[in-house]
Length: 287
Image 1: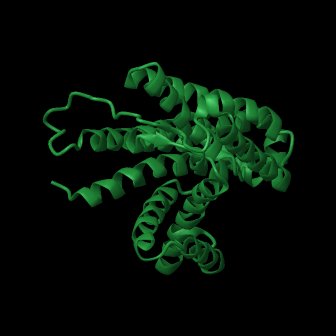
Image 2: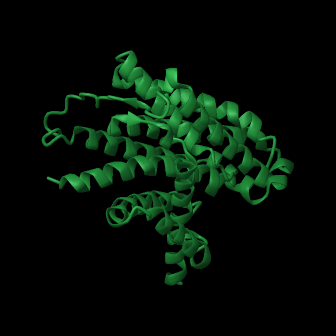
Image 3: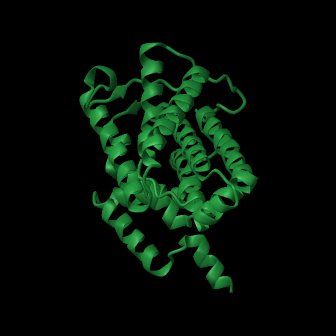
């Protein structure tokens, strides 16, 4: 049986990896530097909190609603954000995250304000052979992690994924070849938002609480750092980055409350000496 602390690290790492992997679909494959991923993550988390605590909804219901609602919000945001590109696209998505944080903090009747939503009970999934020691939710997260990884791999290996890479490399050329660039970007944002909503749902159930910190600027940048640290456009790299940052956050915060400075230093080091991330650095070393 795994030690309790290892289970905590792995569970939180897998939840973060689902969100980071879906963000890599935007940053690494579509060339869309989005800072709004935390907003879609929070939509899934808050939807789960509201449904689970106020409506006694089942795990399946909250999961489906969280994913669909996050996808819908992402699709609406994409209608606005895709009118811009580059830095302006980034600023629009950042504004979305900040607006989401404001709603989470100020809409007290719905979100609980600064306190957030508490008392989100983990679902009883009826897995007696796997639940010994309270590991049933760990195995649930593991199952979703594996399924999401396979779905994302199939997506980036599909003609749709190849088209996204083509758009990233030369948007004008893809237009000349007859591809609907806007539609592909819109679908990528919607799909990534759905995965973020799923991660948010698992996050809310695992922590038993969701508050404005789930959508603040730090959380938004954390997802981006996971992608950059692991290596954008590799999919596996951001998953690795998610586990590394989760481990750093838990371990470093034991010794100092300034662990964010450690993460900032890690970002600077990565940007200077490994601009393609850790997986890119491994490739350079092999050559």
